[in-house]
Length: 141
Image (tube, rainbow, N blue to C red):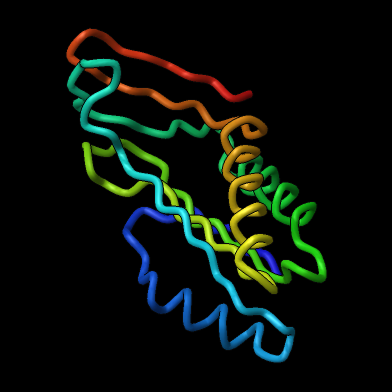
């Protein structure tokens, strides 16, 4: 199973973990890896005031994320989920959650890393960061 959700509020990590373990019972899984990305407070020595994900076409981004997850899920990794926030956030606020359940910890961590790396490189998300020394835009399209 794969799941992508665009959310505005924090999610219940406990609830997602419980659901994933329950839904993947009987598949020989023994590891669940979680990534939680949040806004940094300092980048290259400069204070960060805000960071945001700008998405012109939410449906397109959701489709891109589904394609990434679909290509990473396999027999050893039966479930992966992304909960992604759009909008502007302050330091320490959460931006994204990625969950991967797998047969063992090595596969879970490997796939988690690959999914996050592809999330950053292969989606049409633009990141805008406002720092004390300027505004920085990183496009991913």
